[in-house]
Amino acid sequence: MSWQDIQVNTFMAWCNEYLKDRGMHVADMSKDFRDGVKLINLLEIISSKSLGRYNKNPRVPTQKYENNGIAIEFVKSENIKIVNIGNTDITDGNLRITLGLIWTLILRYQVNRGSNNDGSAKDELLRWVQSKIPSYNITGFKKDWNDGRAINALTDALAPGSASDHSSLNPGNGTANCAKGMDAAYNALNIPKILAPDAMSNPRVDEQSVMTYISYFRNAELAGRTRENEAAALAAKCRAYGPGLVEAVAEENADFVVDTPRDGIELAIRVEGPHTETQPTVQKTVNADGTAKFKVSYLPKEPGEWKVHVTYGGVHIPGSIFHVRVLEAVSLGGEGRIRVFYSTTSSSEKGRKDVQDLQRLLEQKKIHLRPDFEPWIPVDIMEREDREAVFAKAGTRALPIVFIDDKYVGDYDTVAGLEEQGKLNALLAYNERRGH
Image 1 (tube, rainbow, N blue to C red):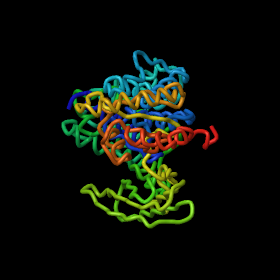
Image 2 (cartoon, one colour; image 1 turned 30 degrees about the horizontal axis):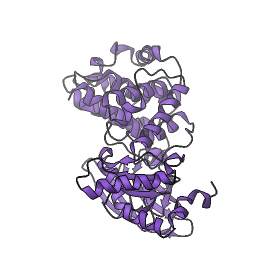
Image 3 (tube, rainbow, N blue to C red; image 1 turned 135 degrees about the vertical axis):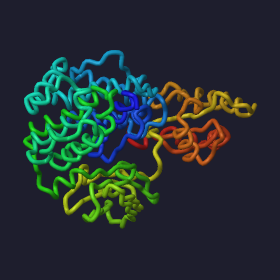
Image 4 (tube, one colour; image 1 turned 180 degrees about the vertical axis):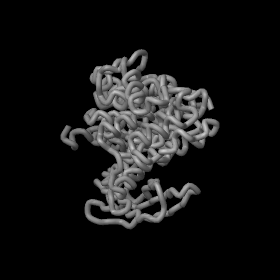
């Protein structure tokens, strides 16, 4: 395991600790921030501020660049110094740059607790650790933590009796000792296990990952958190995530997952729509460590705002009550826009001619001059998932494809037919019907 592997896993776990409040989850650091949606939500959660309007269903590259541009500008507005980090880096999936941005956020909102003094964050955190466990002579955030005794000592310092045998632990059992200390911190202080035991005991452990994890202890003390009410503490350790907690489509199954710290405690799920409730189906799996995973699915019958209540032992878990946008149909993020999808590599003569003829027709109507017309979108440069979503909503793979107000109109032959029938202008005037 390299230091970067450790950093990727730790930073991803840190992100997920916050994103669970909105039912979101990151599984791939180089891919899951590319459309900007999860990055914007992460920033809103950790800053307790709104970033305003953004593209909630970005399918085309320009929307993704725009979303990440909004995120980067917000970071700058918070007087957070970022060097050589741009929206294109995040959208293009540059892992090194993405990790650099996340560390910048961790430093400000986690390690420094919102302070602007990022330069001394490491020294201040180190001094705090030294004040809690002076006998361990901690000088940094790497090798001093490898044998696991220090993390047990720190846990016991904040929750006396939780790891009182720390000084007698065998330093040769580093991974087991780290696991013991992390379990004790999780149970006594609700410190999330964002760093794996075999990562902390690794001689190549990432310094920034250890700092991130240890900062939870300092923050727990600042918040006055020691032993909490058991029911509330257990509920706080649950996590729910998945598309069914964010957005769904009417008459299509909406899925999500709930992870709980132990089996045998009642998990209650209630799903209510604007006018009716629906009964979810739940499949439970008990893991070898005693934790449990619940796969949940429900069928929203109507569009509108739905609410998903998730309680564990009678207490709402983080993020609950979840507010879910249920749409009439899958959104391509093209509401209020005129879009044409085409291929730059069409091998058929008709395909190439259709592109030319459609361009001529739209230019005759001066559509290309309208602010709601997006430049022609080549499907060749789209992510496969986004490209397939376009084809699925259109019900065809025939290109070029025209969408107006996120509704499929047709290929060139269809559009030409609408023009001959005198119906095309009415479709193009959708914005007048919407009062824009």
